[in-house]
Image (cartoon, rainbow, N blue to C red):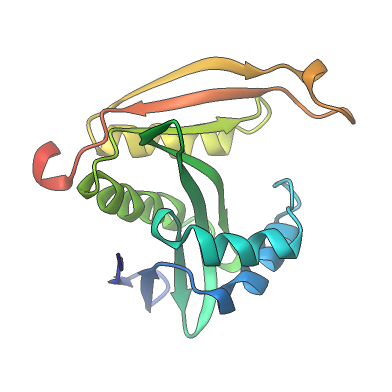
Amino acid sequence: MQIPISKFDAISQQTIQLREPVLGDGAQMWRIAEDSRVLDTNSSYAYLLWCRDFPDTSIVAEIDGEIAGFVIGYTRPAWPRILFVWQVAVDQPHRGHGLGVDMLDALLESAAARGVTQLETTIAPDNPASVAMFASLARRRGAALTRTTLFTADQFPGGHQPEDLYRITPVTTQEEWR
């Protein structure tokens, strides 16, 4: 299912295309994740597989033929009404304009139309920007945002921060929440 959305950003004076990722986007997505210095960077192979296997639960933002950001997610196999968002990334030149929330909003619109009723993501306690982005998304959509502990630091090898589970519910289409 395609998510073709064009949006004109008055600040940057650029047209942003929001769409499902294709295989050719994987390398740019990996570069954005690697350059973020915040995200746990998956292998380049993983981003290629994501583009191939999960395009309907992911989205990219394209500006002037280049990927400016992405959201990768999947529906949980045992709970197909839950969309788990794995990563949200916006390339450095495009940060601070709400692109992350715009991508999440478009992805949730598509997912809600397919029956998704909840969004889940994990966020480390030292990442207030991600917490703020998901809180903004929940407010925009009139949904509740809850937080619980999912993985403690001692469950990770190699000194990883704990990860809290954030859940946004209900996920509905714009028609339903406006």
